[in-house]
Length: 324
Image 1: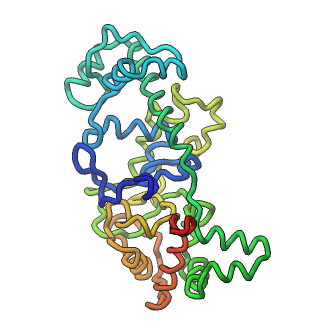
Image 2 (image 1 turned 60 degrees about the vertical axis):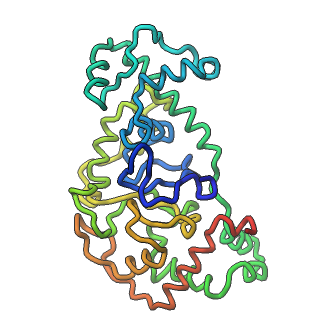
Image 3 (image 1 turned 30 degrees about the vertical axis):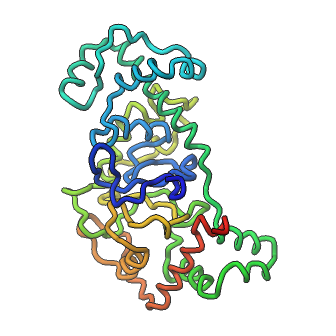
């Protein structure tokens, strides 16, 4: 839903069947170094390929998809990417992972055929990413407030945020310590943190712990042959990525807080129904059920301060800037 920054508002994503994690918003993702809650992809185009072959999302396979493009969008594809591979002898379904039939069919293909299919498949992802790059960061009432301060227009700034909201901003920057993981333009550090979420365990979701290996071995990563990166120095995120960091156990990506009040429920599988529930969790800083939590100390905010912090977060609503 565009009004929800191109996510669905469900506790977990639903395609052919229910997934296990929430759908993340797309606004501003052109600036992200890693994708999905666990960061197992390192580009918009590579991320777009995952749901296409996921058995609970689209449930397709790459050979099928390339054949669909050839049947319905050949002219458009050729205009952008050049000729499609020769599809005349390909099976209807084939992929290196998936059903036993698809995997068996994939193994009958020559290395050249597999490479040609992978190239065309990656181009499908790049076409999707080209659209996603047009979805900008949403402007908010807080942005207007910040711009007024930068311009030295204190009177306008005072009209844009209430006293309660300004108090919440101070808490965001100081006692609440929210800015540590939710700073920068996107209100996210784009990193991965264990925050002691309830019901999280190795059996349910290991988070970043295993995703680093998936990314390292992904043929569609920045260093792979299908990447458009001109040289390895353009892929510093994956080149410098460590796979042995204990703090990545049970860790998930810090989402952007822009429009956060308009996107319940919260966390990677919708553990919290309301924004207030989220703030209470951070305030209490419980021990992690799996791994080591980054929340080492309770924030000790009063009920009034929690209300002020929530009021500030609502200044990041997308609709505020549109006057709705």
